[in-house]
Image (cartoon, rainbow, N blue to C red; front, side, top):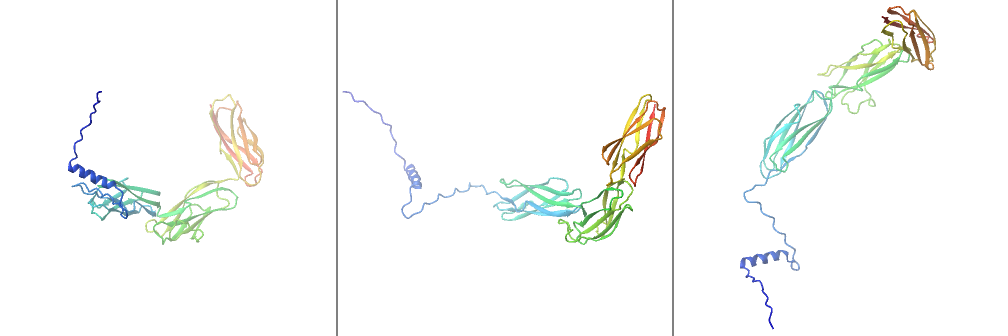
Length: 362
């Protein structure tokens, strides 16, 4: 009977150093003996010849200047700290726009701090602004730091709401409006005088009460009041209320006036213009008559001194709006049209409306 032979691998004996290393590795994973705590593996040592890097930290990367007067220079120094063990280099500081000027400390020692000084010229800004400065450092973990200056830029003299606006009908009760005026950089502001651009508008000034003060305003605040008379001349309102003050840089504040004074009865367009047209055919046009008064209006009749012109009254809104439908007959003589429509009304203030008629028949 034959025996089956088997082959076994030859295992070489462990060298003494390998045995020692294996024993040390097993000891790391062995459970602690009773009453002993597990020992932590030692931290890996720093690579020989390599120093730890600097560390850059911006203590306050965003700074809010609050409300500032337009035209002032807003200046702030940001602090950059170096919490590392090597010198921190500030390689470049780059402002986002030409309105910002910067200077800085180029090197910050370990454990020390340096400054980045930013200055913003607010002369070309109004309202909320945010101006950024980018700092480039030698910290590999924070190579670029963004710094921001914020502010609310207001004029040296500010007024709220900033303009007077009136939509008035002749004969209606007088209308009034007011402004609150203050200075963003001069709390001792005094108003010395106010002047109106038109006799129909009366202006006065006084110190604002606590209830009238604008919450965002500073220092002394003043009320500028304007009252439009009951019967000013019809037409657009324009001009400025001139406010004289003791502000060292802004002696005069001009507050614009806008709006319109309507007659009780208004014709739109104010002229019946037929333009230039060939003869031998009828020509049509229209004007709108609107009653802005409180009492209902009636149109009692209409006539014209233009030969061949016929007008028909169409009431679009009872007592308020009327169309005058105009037709020039086809046999109107060639040449320029010059004349007027005369409309009789029930308005005691405007019993007769005269509407010019123009045009040319070729």
